[in-house]
Length: 329
Image (tube, rainbow, N blue to C red; front, top):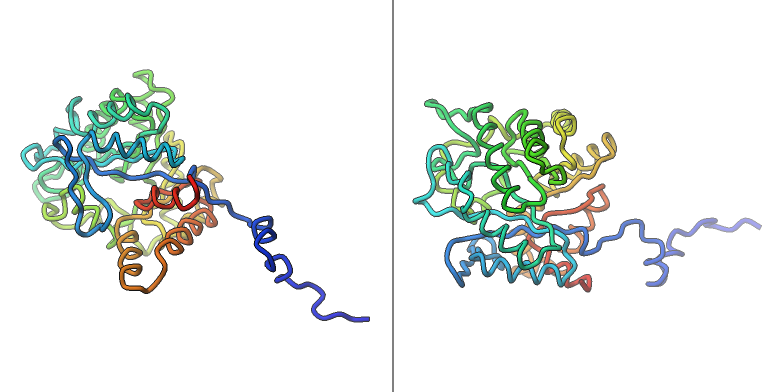
């Protein structure tokens, strides 16, 4: 006797226990990296208007957030400083100060919560008066090799303070190899490099620039060093170069608009791939939830699951603590 249909795919979806059993992708708090913004002062919290629910915290507040993250099962924090205008300069020299805001935050976190990972941004945009990620010439062009030399010093400065993962976000050619060599020479053999390998010149970064105080400073755009959103093959070339130069993992940034890049990188290289769910993506979810266009909790978890399904080992997300708590972390 013929039966129709022979296979019913709804059969395994018919109960909650079965859906859990057949789930192909697992999302846990251990998949999350929580970006935090550091500011000067003591007992300071500065809400960021374009990032509702996100604040800049003074170092003592960052330590408190690190404790919350550890309790929720989040394995790693990503730090970004809001450098005071008086300490910004054309050459971004504050990046090399061993007692700068970033280094003080690293040391405080590692002293208070030694078992949580600390990932640090390597780029000059939080420190330059012009808001670019590197040194600029008289015509406003960002200089590659001269910038890379400064980035090496910045990376070593952060490693000496206790950073676990150096994450160059500047997109200068060759900087990963120079940083890896310098870390090895100074004995930081276990300090990881997570390369911002495919970082696009995106319209989704606006709230981040508010958070680190660089939006109003930026002269021109970053299209001569960040990638063209039209390009995918170029992203694979960027990833290949960074891996050859010693990157332990690579990042795609932004996140959801570039899931195709995540998938292609994972399939081509079979290495740890991370995505940054950037400030504009976060702000859109918050705006949708505030407008009643979607359930906030469901939107957060579904988008994070999309990163994992595409092949990510982990995700940098401003929703990390909220998501971890939703998952029972």
